[in-house]
Length: 111
Image (tube, rainbow, N blue to C red; front, side, top):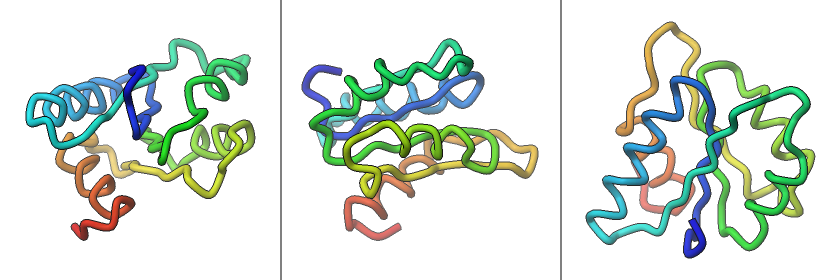
């Protein structure tokens, strides 16, 4: 994650899709992604998120709900305007393709 330009933050089952996205993109050499997989949400790991998010061009929070953790991330990073959300809350699992579509949008590459 040291060379990551874009940081994905995830937890639980959605972290699998986030990890697959990171692995796939790095294999293709087209994107420097890193993943911070949260192991605990309470108490929220403020210092870890703040430290790992520093210096990244974007942070993408991947979660299977309405964006509650995204809100927590925005509270603790120095550039909350650079924090985005990739989520699903319809009972289906978020896929690497879903995450990639959001990454393309925030990087100005369309969908």
